Image (cartoon, rainbow, N blue to C red; front, top):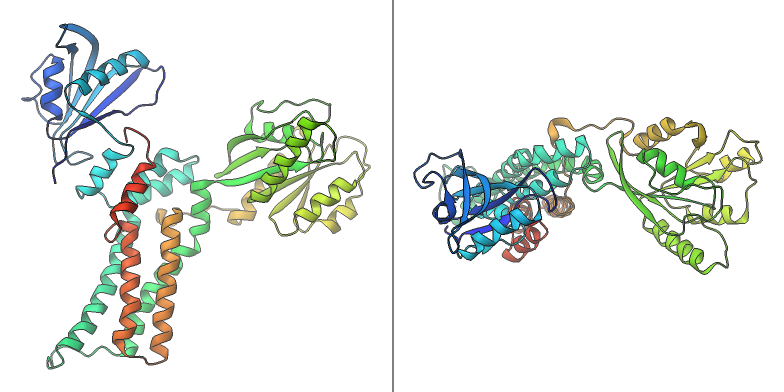
Length: 457
């Protein structure tokens, strides 16, 4: 499959030591060679680096000193000729080189187009292509390991194995139906089909059992810190982030807006959200903040509800308890270094979740909170066996659908319906698994997935 030559900046925008302009396509080396003063790039070996200068042919002026990487097809990321021009870091240098390449008729790449070409040229399948973005966006070591396992093809290999098992079953039924006179072909029975489909169903169930962990590792847990003003919400956020992200004062209502930050807590990525204190108020600005806090509370995966050890329970606190009835939450009683005025027995009765105590001014209780977070979601230990963890929401949805179609097939088998009718559900399962690796994915789906990639990848 041949495509035109594309280019894009493959490094983040901003100042740095190096910026890279990447080209991919049949004309990548020849076009770069016309702009490069140094060795003849059309004659150099593949996978070599060459020092030289990028020249503007119109003015015969030097635009930048560069090192050019030459990688010849098919042993490249895209399976095409690939050139990477290593410029000086900074906005001006890399933009000048990019514009020079564009002036030669090279097209600016679309988001994710380099990875899309790797997929279309058969170097990787769709699940591996999606893993490229997971590697880039990983926020913890565990998430990185899962993404690398998927990029390495572990999930793809299992999916291909399951699809092969299904297609052999489907073919066996087809032969029995179309060629009943073939005596040397064993007749497919209901028991044989149930045995073969049960194996696939069991493997899918194994993947789905750890899918919740995988989704958490990939996307993080949306965690809202709520409570009345001045209970220590901003102090808790600063303690977990280990940085002064939120303003901390003794004045109630200091936090008027939502503050968000990602934090890695024992391998769990938390999307930590410090909300405005929830209370009745006449202050217009504070009231807007409280309304936003209510909205965040409804959308959160986990709530850290903070109370003040030095204050008795108020009606505002009871209202928050009511809102948390059907949610995952941990009650944190802060300021235990002060005199006790909070009835802890009452808190234990109201709280269905865990109750922890902290004194953030003395940095006490944070370790227990981190352990509680780990215990809630991973029973205290993140198990990533052989990196075989499904973390992509699209994959999880397709696996759930595949599991459902196999259950329908099993029900049909138990009702002793004709095998050609059972085969409809088995074929649908084969198609759903194919969407994970891209074998049966539609062109519009592929375009949508790659449009979410960053430019230059």
